[in-house]
Image 1 (cartoon, rainbow, N blue to C red):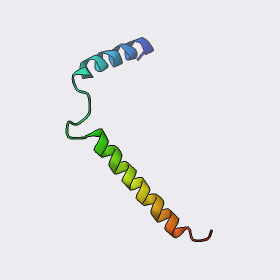
Image 2 (cartoon, rainbow, N blue to C red):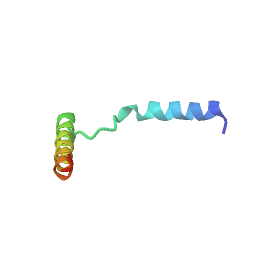
Image 3 (cartoon, helix red, strand yellow):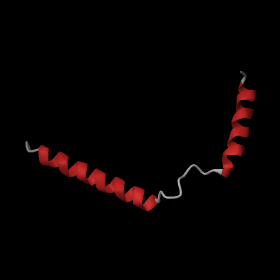
Image 4 (cartoon, helix red, strand yellow):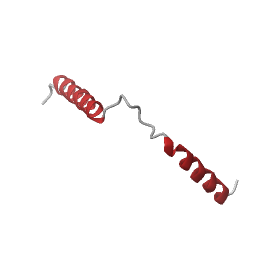
Length: 54
């Protein structure tokens, strides 16, 4: 395959995929971000509990 034909196929694929955004309707960005923040804070707290050598 040559570069122009590959690029043309990708453009066609992207144009057809414009109907679907790829995001599920039930996934709220605020819930996802909040859950990620809570998980990272929990991991930070666990890490600091095990790091007693300071």
